[in-house]
Amino acid sequence: DGGITQSPKYLFRKEGQNVTLSCEQNLNHDAMYWYRQDPGQGLRLIYYSQIVNDFQKGDIAEGYSVSREKKESFPLTVTSAQKNPTAFYLCASSASRDRGNEQFFGPGTRLTVL
Amino acid sequence: LAKTTQPISMDSYEGQEVNITCSHNNIATNDYITWYQQFPSQGPRFIIQGYKTKVTNEVASLFIPADRKSSTLSLPRVSLSDTAVYYCRLSGYTGGGNKLTFGTGTQLKVEL
Image (cartoon, rainbow over all chains, first blue to last red; front, side, top):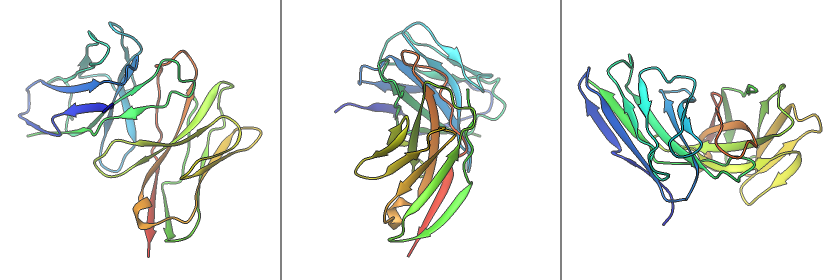
């Protein structure tokens, strides 16, 4: 069953702690993305990666870090430098040969910082 | 990257046709237009994609005029389950994986 998985679905952390969100895909997609969504708002791009061992900052990368050591995995770390980390985080992937860059999204992780 | 503009919200009734228009005045020559649907606390899912003229699939139609400065998603005979946020997104072919940004979306509310 192909798709994108994100874990956990809900995550609670204390202020000042780093936390890593998992994203795995078995679609054999080269490109992966992380978005943040706040209540009533659209998706804002945090980081994206076109190939393994390479990634670029999106529009709101400050306070976040990523790695792309494997094609199927693109974990996102929310650091203590992120001022307002509480949000819904979405991971996506797309195929390198898709001219329209159709993205497939995971179910999301809702992070709450207490 | 070209910016997209959509209405913030729309209301409709079951059985009606709904048309949501997205403006993208600065669309690039190689940009495709893609529409996504998102339910609360879920990831967006693909609805339809096009480059020019009209595209139709089993759930929607996409109308793109010749100048491509706008596009219209048409949902025939909506039902309550079509209540969701709809996003218009542009993307160019660069071999995959580029800065794909979304607008604020249109909240569609369908009532009985």
